[in-house]
Amino acid sequence: METSTCDRSLTVNNVLGQAWELTKLYFPPVLILVVVMNFLPSMSNIWVNSSDLYQRIIEATASGETPELDDLGPMALAEFTVGGVLALLLIGLVETYLRGALCHVLVTTVNEQTPGLLQSLRHALRHFLHFLGIYIVHSLCILLGTLCCILPGIFMSVRWLFVPFIAMEHPELPLGETFARSYRMTEGHFGELLWLGIASVFLNILGLLCCCVGIYFTIVITLFMQAVLYRMLKPEETPAPTGPEN
Image (tube, rainbow, N blue to C red; front, side):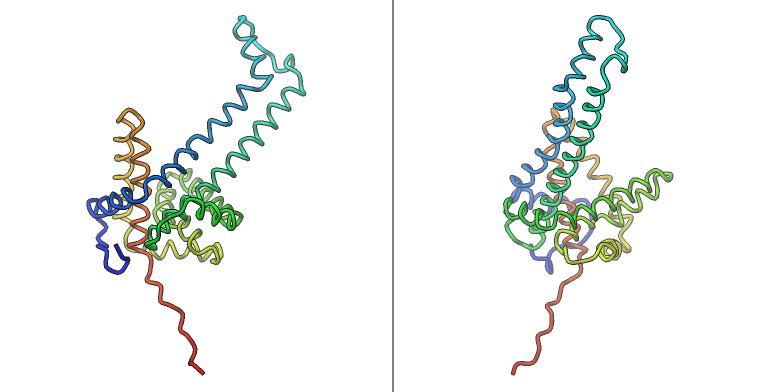
């Protein structure tokens, strides 16, 4: 499916059909990253459950007592709090790194290349700080927009949908141009992209109802739906002109 000849109509049937074809070809690397990223939050629970402070609280509760923070010890409380924050920070950094690798895998499908998981992991590591900064700004803007009556968050989510993809495909671009390029790509397609986003939500709900395991399959399909949209709306890249031959 070449970029220049693929069907660019933004309908659910067309986007879902092309996403299904990509899913059949490149399902394993995307699934691996999705599973690992969904497993990471449970690591914070392991820290909490293994801490001495948590065990003391459980023992006091089991014996019918109400544990007081002053009785648990300031050092244990400080260790529990600082350790939990550091664990969450580390998990967040690893999750962001894997998200960058995931975006690179999806971008390589856009460019008609076979996505290599190790290649994407190396690419994400080389450009981790760049992607981390963009991802933080992107997430904070959408969060603040959502807190402002929800609608601004929905608007920014649609107009800046391709920011992570652009950041991975063109890490040389500055932050402002990355956001501006996504904004230009989605110009005039807000309603269609919003409807496709709603369709993706319902698809994942359907996957969740299929014994919960189906959610991993539908998540991969919806990710490839985003990759298909990126391929449809990204501008044609013309090669740089070469100078006159000597």
